[in-house]
Image (cartoon, rainbow, N blue to C red; front, top):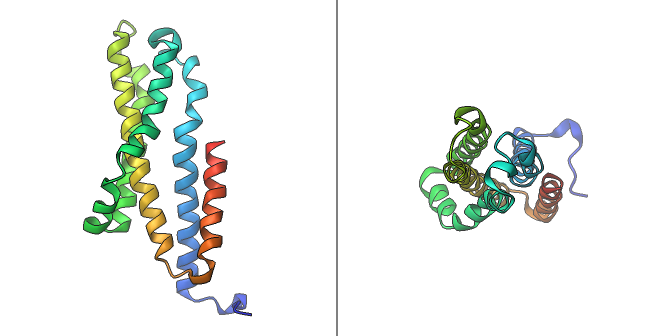
Length: 168
């Protein structure tokens, strides 16, 4: 009862399913970016030997910390710019932060001060965190207002599973 035969899918059904898959991708990449990169940092040229192991923890904590501090920003962006622009900005900030973080070992001379390196990496990871806040809030807004009706609980739980996979 209530199911639509596969040959009767409407464009709205396709858009809803596509938006869910896109949101899964956003959630997976944001959480894997926040947690999985940490394991590779000590092996990098500017890893724990250069900045110190405590600072490595602070650098990677900057992403989730800045996500938390960014809580007031996404609702304003969604309201003023719309869901799509908010998600796009979030992805742009996330990619920029990750890319800049990866380029720091190449761009800075090896004689750079550990303080300068740490500050730049903290800023890059914080930018990724702001991006995560925007992208995730935009995706959750799109899904919760996307017309899923009684299936909204299933949709949200599937997002939590994908987030868990990305974080692990």
